Each structure stands twice: as structure tokens, then as C-alpha cells.
Image (tube, rainbow, N blue to C red; front, side, top):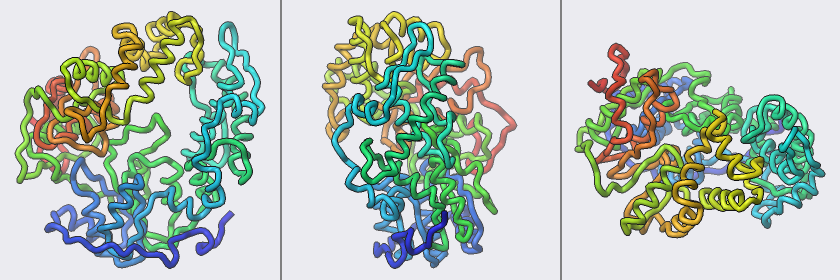
Length: 505
């Protein structure tokens, strides 16, 4: 169903009146992008780490004085952009557009009280599902999986809920998963019907009204649409922008930092219907030495991009005793570093907080005491021993093994106490983060932890690992301790020249 532009969009008649800030002299790459935008070309802009993509989009906006929309990844980015983009550019998130169009009708359902799992099961009418010996899914867990299925559907570009949206559960494989998915879909569709009812009873989420809006196939009343961080867009947002065929579409991001496929994101840059693909390779975040280190990782990815460092910045690589940030591959290694720093009397912050780690540790205590847990990652395991056997003997459980080893080594109580000792980042000596959670952030000094495993037998570095290494080393501005990723030196691949900065030797 296609509704009128005026009825669907709050952009009509509204403008941002932020002052226009002066810009530095454009680089040759930026001038090329501006000229292509001025011609009205649909563009993909591959912007390496710290290369000034927002500044470039402002240049594009000044070159194109048409009605423009900048879609930001989150609200803080949108607000910051709104203060500096030209006045003919509206800076919003996809969620804010959707809320103004359809979400207001459901405002009374947002930010409601916590939803008891038992109440959710009651609303959906879920029942026990027997999947075999010692594998029975309770009504409460069935309801949780149904609601998570709706969430995955909301992230997707599909019009209907199917078994493809049912998330996999630890310990549930093959035919058991197929049976679970078939049983969950009717409940998920019932949940989606409840969500679409202004008087529904389930907890209402922001992603719900975004999906509702996208399903109306809205036509944005603008001449230019700029999608930022396109490499991490949910398919629903990427499709929505793709459908604006009446407008010039410009997608900006860095495909080499596309790491959220596991949670439903897609690299929209890779499939964008673009007239031209252009690059930004001069990083203003760090100097030549760190740029060269980043290029070692880019050399392992199928990309022509190579970075040039900021000639006005001095960066160096070496061992750091008190880095501003420590980046880890896993949450378990992050907790180990937190424990070590606390033992040294340091004030420590954990990026994203420690709530989920604490919940996992509490769930571990339940299993160790002989009780089952309702934690969504561990509920299928009757005992701690069963979980230990799963992570040691089943490839599907390898992602839980670092957590199990952490509990076995330090004990759940010590981990809970460590989480309770964390401080805010504004008051900490060191921030500990996973590389995933470090995306979009930077520190003057960064140390890489030692849980970034080198490929067995020195085979090919998986693309996902190369991307993670690239993200990790490019979080540092001035000082980088690359200890945990120094094995990249063994993997130089001569003959894979790229554009932009020089290849590392």
C-alpha cells in the first residue's frame, strides 16, 4: 500500500536551521566526490577509518542545494550533524522518521513496565514443545523465541515472518531446530498482530514502528538521500533508501568495518545500485605508522582501499604499560583484563557496561548449584557439566567456551564482584572493550589483547578476522600496542596493490 507523501512524512515544511561551519581545504578525493554528486550520480563512498566522511557529506550538501535528507546511524550523530549541516539538509535517524509517520499512534505502549516472561507466554498462549530426550522448550522460552523472531523480522527486508527469522538456540540443531522454527512461527505471527494493535498487550519496541513504516513503502519528499554507516544498516533501512528511486541516493561507510551480520545488519554498500564507487583514503585520526599497520589488515581483505596517515600527526607502535583502552576479541578476555586491572588498583570501565556478563555469571551459578536457568543462552542445559561438555565437544558451542573457561578459572562470584566494581568511563584509568564495541570510537593510546587467535597452520586469515583486526588497530590516534595482533607480520601478501595509501612492507 502506497500512501501520500504529505500524509507519511514529517519532513514536509520542516527545516534544520543549524549554522554552516567552515571546512578545511578539500582533498582531491573529496573534490571528485563533490563533482560526482553535483552531476546527480547515485554514489557509494567507501570511507576508510577516520577519513572525514561527515565533512565530505557536508561538502556534498553545499554543492547540492536541493532538499536533502541525511540518515544517521543513531540519534547523537543525527543531532551533531543537525548543528553543522546546511539548512536545506534534514538530519534524522530512520527511527525518528518512522515515529513521526506512524509511531506516535503507539507512543503510549513505549517505555512501559517490564514484561514478565510468564505474562508474555500467557498473552501468546505458548505451550511446551518436546524435541526429544532432555530437550523440552518451556512456554516461557517459546514466547521469548517468538518475540525474538519478530525482532529479526523487523530488521529484515521481508514482508512476512517465516522460519528463516527464528533464531538458532544453543544445543538445538538440525531437525530439532526445524521443528522448533515451525512451532514458533505461528506464535511470532500472533505476536506481530499484537504489536500492530494500538491496544496490544506485549511490550512495544522502537523497531516495531520502523518496520510498520517500511512496509508502507514510503516515498521520502526529498531530492537527495544520504545514508551514513551503510555497511551496518539493517536490511529494512537499506531497502527503504533503495526504494527512493526518484531521489539521488548516496551511501557512505566502510565495507571493511562491516561486522554486525550476526545481529541482522547487512553491508548495503556491497549491493548498492550506484553509478560510481568512490573512496576516501586520507585518515585524519592517526599518523603514517598506524596507517601502515591498518594497511596490513586491508591487504587481507578483498578491497582496493589503502590508507594514508595524517601528515600533521605523529603516531608510534610499541608496548604500552598504561593504555587508555584495551581491546579484546571476546567478552571473556575483556573480563580477564578487568580482573587484572582491578587487582592492580586501577579504576576500570567496560565499554557497554557489565550487565550481560553479570547475568551470565548469575546463570552459571544457578547451573552449578544444580538448578536450571532461564537465561536465553543457557536455558537448554540441565547442569553445568552438560554445558561444559557442549562447549568442548560441539563446534556450535565454541563461542560459549571462553565464558565457561572464565567461570571455571575465576568463579562466578569473583566475576560478579568485578562487574560491581566498574566505574564510568569519565572516571576510569582504562577502558576495556571488545573490538566490536569499539567501532566508532577512538583513544590516544590503545593496546590489543592476546585473544585474537592466529589462523591454525598459518592458513588464510578469515575475512571477518581481518576486518576485526583493521577495526582494532584503527582505534588508536597516537600510540598503538599491537601485541595481540603482531602475527599479521607473517601474512604480508605482495602483489595485491590497492588505491590510496601505500602498502605496508
